Length: 125
Length: 413
Image (cartoon, rainbow over all chains, first blue to last red; front, side, top):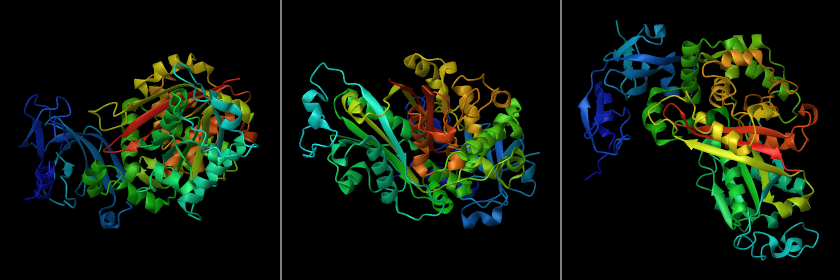
């Protein structure tokens, strides 16, 4: 029997284009990246499917990547996203309009044009 | 007891414990003071011409030679290196044939240089060592450095590498873009860091970048991770840095200008819920650092600020209290950062113009500070330098540098 991985559901959600996040059973904090325990109160965490919406806190346009497997996705738009679910994530934006990314713009989880194994976002209307 | 007398050997010409007898590391109740007496670097290489151990040995050997200390007198060793694992400080001691009573592995990324020197001072004060060599260095190229970053911390490997995230460049581009949006900071303002430091590098034969850099060059450079362009980014290279910290009695015997660590503070994971180094963590201890040192910001003769990117120099100037939050752009514009100016910044050229020798980048500021305070900086000497600030910053992980440290060094004579 494999040892349970605290991050597995986040990774599985990413593969399916779904935003699966943890929420603290005790204090309801949503930590963003998977954790073994709540980084606020040290209590146990449960999983939920979060709405994929949020806003860009900051973004950058990568003109190069050192990893050849990602070169065909250049320019890559890296974004720090504040999720409406209450957490922040660093991710990438996809879609032909991604270079129009700007701080404050709304985003949503991308279902098309995805290329990462993790959840990616697109500019929302 | 730090010293058992056994590892010192019998060379009467050696400055060491022999002439100091049993006073070193004292008995219960005695307080030993530590002095920083020497520094050195290995020659930096853009493309590796030597292996890591050669760089570490060269820096160590030059550092000891400058102080007239024999290798066998070293009984404390601190090491920071990203490319040496699975080797560590103890395996390096074995390789060098050093008998240690104290060892420290720097695990704080670019903050390790400052932290390990602080730990070395603590060890000497506590009587656990009397002669500590602090080393930091790596053998890197741009490519090997980039691939290391994909697994630099667990979170980077798991959650950033699958995004082709652009290494540290991408993450600090997020910081700069946010700072620009919040405070109106301009590329011209940040460019003053890169341009001034290049002027300093032209006076430093050890710097890898030896061609002048204008603001126009900076602004027009090739985009890497916009808003960052080429001269915002340090160039990974090979090299090592060394600093020697010894018991005050031994310091007197070296006849080197003695320096003291007036204060050292560190903060790790200062902002658990932030994903950007904005603020960077330096603000957690800045006031205590200056209070401990009994010095004001205006008393400093120079600052050696960790400069992986100009934006982080700007953030540090704010967080360390040289200017208000959000005003670093205007501060950079109004302040002469040159060697003869108001606040001489990274007087050897910093990592931006010397190259970033991996973990050596966290020690280069300490080495430059020691050299300046010992008045051996040649053409780039800050006149009559008596005290200065050195900062460290590093262990970049999911979005932010997790470690910060600051130290104030001063002449002790």
